[in-house]
Length: 120
Image 1 (spheres, rainbow, N blue to C red):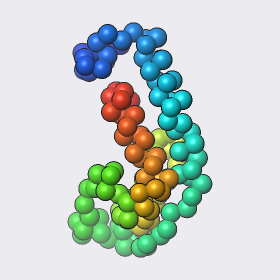
Image 2 (tube, rainbow, N blue to C red):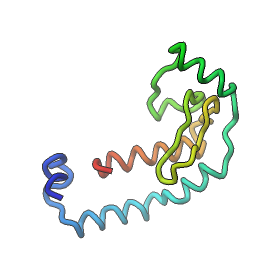
Image 3 (cartoon, rainbow, N blue to C red):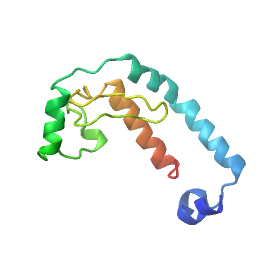
Image 4 (cartoon, rainbow, N blue to C red):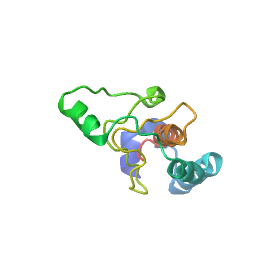
């Protein structure tokens, strides 16, 4: 805990272990990441190009980094493997879907958690 306070004083300066646990569990209750995770893995993304073409795009530097909020409609150049569970959610060449896709929703939720509790 001392390292957290040192690295993120605005978030953790006046927080004890019990407070941190309460904050984490409140976030879990409020956001239900398990349901988002299940939805993301229960919906199959659409393959727009072959994995080979996605690989060739990487090799030829015909790719770009995209912020999560700009993922809708984009094609993954590489596999997207959230952990947990460590299973590919999208494979190379698959479309992220629209702004309401479960895959974009899970990645957005993960980013929100990271900004709420920066050490995670």
